[in-house]
Image 1 (cartoon, one colour):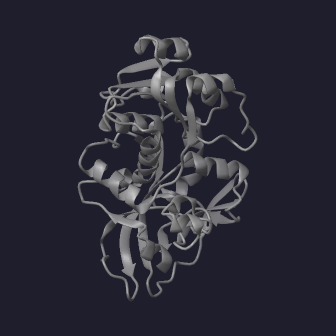
Image 2: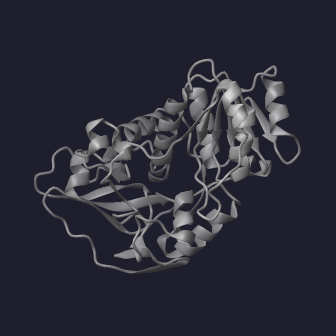
Image 3: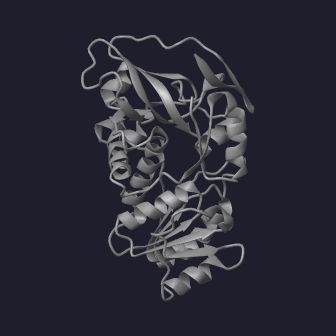
Length: 345
């Protein structure tokens, strides 16, 4: 099969590799769509402790079941499925507490396991047993289903941050993930959803129906703008949906008393440190948290929301590329000229 291989840092090629072999308890997928995550771009440039090169990246995956191993129940040929990337061991300290995202022996597609930038994807028996595959209906496209993974991560983040009926949510970064957060926040009952973005031209043609206000941070001070929209109180929840140290620092000043700040976007390895005014946290009793990853249950819920039209994602994939053009796809994804980018083998 053909696969996009990260041979070494900043060297991505497409070449032939052996087809996956079906084993007892395993499943093989024909990959139909694998979206490019900002994490993939960081691995491309800087690597990752859990990725040994050369390797096939890609963890936002949707595909079709083409082979089912002996002993597998509940799946059949032709099933349309989305993949939850992380496979928990089920036995470590965190798994015993039900916190599978923190599993000490976890393996993930695109990290320790071969990822979705390939024609076929091998789902090992332990992943099948863990339930990483969730089916979705014909009414949902493969490209849309590939976004169930980031939406599932957003679900965990908003659940942790307490986004619920009556909350005011400010989101810094109005790229595809920021817009996904905005739509999810409205679905979760937020009364105001304020988007903060410095490149508002990216929003052209996107559905902003659930967004209360857009703050162009290249033209106005976000703290002043958010205060103006909230009668001076600030937001109940602030989500940083971009990889920006400045945005993380700024986020504390957008939160009101008792507010929750979620760092949803990680920072690049060469710039991981920020300086903050800890008195803002202390005197206004602001909680700061991070979020990443998801479980099969989160993924199932995300697919349900997409299928039922609760969270629209169809306009968040602005460009698709064939596997042979994966280098161009990565380059375009980094340009920020569009929204989310998908590779479709």
